[in-house]
Length: 252
Image (tube, rainbow, N blue to C red; front, side, top):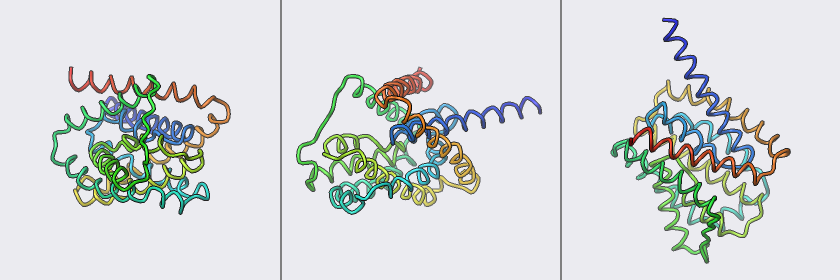
């Protein structure tokens, strides 16, 4: 009995650390909470449960970011087609998550995480000309929505749109807050519809939002002390290790 209690207690401690770490990353650079938390949680849980556990944290942490700035109307107007298409295609993405083997989703997730890191370390910036057109925004939105629904990762290929916009930091942060809040609300509704959610998982998701919020507060302190560039190097290095670790654990 003592051994079982110790193991369960140990797991809860690890999960709290994972959410705190995701919050630290989010607080420091404005993104990364879903990527870090899902990337680490799937070492302990199925991909579907891992995504379910982070949704309350994502909703709460992005709610403040939605109103952080005075560009709400401009940001929505500029990216309207992307927001509509990406939000709509989360639903078929979640359906794919439901019907596909978890190993396929995990493989795709590992590819996304590793690709994200390699693009940074290779200094590859992919920009899209005329990124505000209906065709390009709808296509990017379609792809991003499917990826969000299947993996819970919000930033690929959304990052290509962000790199193409001539936005200052405050507008980018507000766009990410609006987008991620919208995505997580759609996910939590669809997860209930597809029976991924139950009262137990929801309760855990609420509890785990506490270390995530604390992590964000700590991350904002780090942002004042540590060079953002250095932190991005550490962040992407960690992502690369996580992605490779996922491959090794699940496919070798």
